[in-house]
Amino acid sequence: MICILLVAGHGTVLETQIKSDVSGLYAHLAGVPKALLPGVGGKKILDFWWETVNTRQLFSEVYLVTNADKYKHYERWATANDFPVENVVNDGSTTLEDRLGAVADVELAIRSRQLQDDIMVIAGDMLCSDQSFDIAQVIRFFRSKPGELAIYYELESGEKSCSRGIVEVCPNTHRVIRFLEKPPEGVTSSRLASVVFYCLRKESLLYISEFLCQHLDAKDRTFGKFWEWLVNDVKDPVYGMKLPTGFQLIGQVGLSDYTKWLAHYSSKQQLSPSKPITCRSHARVGLIGNPSDGFNGKTIAMTISNFWAEVTLVESQTLVVLLPHPLNDPTEFGSLQDLFRVSRKEGYLGGLRLLQATCKKFYQFCSEQGIALSKQNFTLKYDTNIPRQVGLAGSSAIVSATLKCLMKFYNITDNDLPKPVRANFILNVETDELFITAGLQDRVVQVYEGLVYMDFREYVPLEMKDLPLFWLAYLGDPSDSGRIHSNVRQRWLNGESAVVEAMKSFAELTDQARAAFQCKDWARLSQLMDENFELRRSVYTEECLGSGNLRMVQLARQMEMKRAFQEAGCVFCLIVPYDPSVEGQD
Image (tube, rainbow, N blue to C red; front, side, top):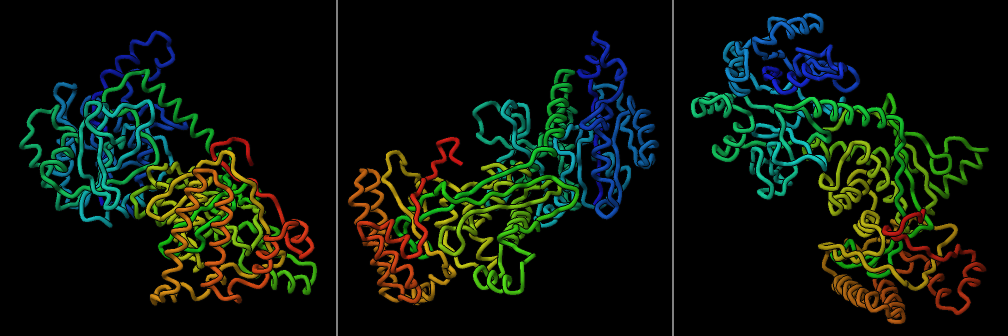
């Protein structure tokens, strides 16, 4: 692949305002082309792009296209930065009026250097928020698609779509279905802005000449017009890839734009490395419908404040995801007998595998979804007080909290990873990567949080005001919660009528419970929860349910249940519902 950096624009507005500025702060920048102005971190804007693409493993050659007016500036820059001077292409223009246009500048480089390869085109005078994104990931995504590639970013709140080329991207195929060059407000709801950062296949380079033949005026020879023509008229397959960053100083800008965005991006870079990111996900209780979530059923579940998993991410020089938790991932023991007892009770699988699997799946998801991640490393550690193997969704809470940290660290938004997709992502980490028996219920309620009705086609948050008191009891020495599911799934897949009908009944009970919540009919809710257990008991064997669990249900039906549970050696506590709309609960 060959890279072409475009710096042939005539930044007349910015240059004029720098020269006429009376403060004297910018006198040393008079006459300096936009690409050679100081950027984020003090380095020149062009320095950043040259460092990004200066990789022989990725690009066989890099070319720089400039104009005759600023050619000497770039020649000096090239010699000072080990850029091959013979690869600096002069387009001959000296003013804005006699410019060739960006598309013609690229065609000049292709024709004059007889280029016959895939090319990447980047505007070398753009200010980029993220100074460490992975250019190799962009190339891999481009080569995985049967078409061209357009890089886009999500506009910040103060940016208007009428100032950018806007793309509408199919969320499933990632193909750009419409390209709108600086559309008026209201024409599209998309906030995805394309910039001069593209990849073209070598067999598609002929489109450039065809476009230039149809567009003779230099003001129409912009890449915005080119992609609008290529996507909307030619119907050439163009795919979109998102960079979770921002781009500014595009086209004609003024001194106020330069100083504002440079300060904004510089402050973001200074703040980002030092502040740890800590995210928490809560345990959940399944109130009704459980376990039909794995069998096309319906459930209602609730997150609780009593128990949680917390993950902390800190930027670091190397990637460290294997910081053992002293209790859940012990590496030191008091004696061989201590190791024996801990291993017999806790097993050999702590939380580290959950962190590692989540990171692996996250990178895979972003690569497949066309989201380029920055080349930043981090250290992950976790803590949790969720009791193991009691069915409170402890594993998925760790995965969920890890995913929250990764999304914040890499600036991945809810649009990139919507809540329904997030729930399936967490489930896939456990089932596909770690082969944990699980259903969607836990992951959905931990993503949406609060009290949630689920029929697994839609997820509906329920009102949490004036809920009745709920209690939780669990065995002090539980068995593996995954074993509870036993062979019911196979029986359901085999079409066993008792299991199929039971799952339908679970769904019906859930709908009735939803109505009870809405009417605040707590007596009816209690009755339905009892019926749910009896139905579950009819499907699962006593061995699967566990004699201890059955004993707890019997104790729960006694008047003095707290005392009875405690005397039976169970842990008993009052549930504190976690309502995401209420601050300061953790």
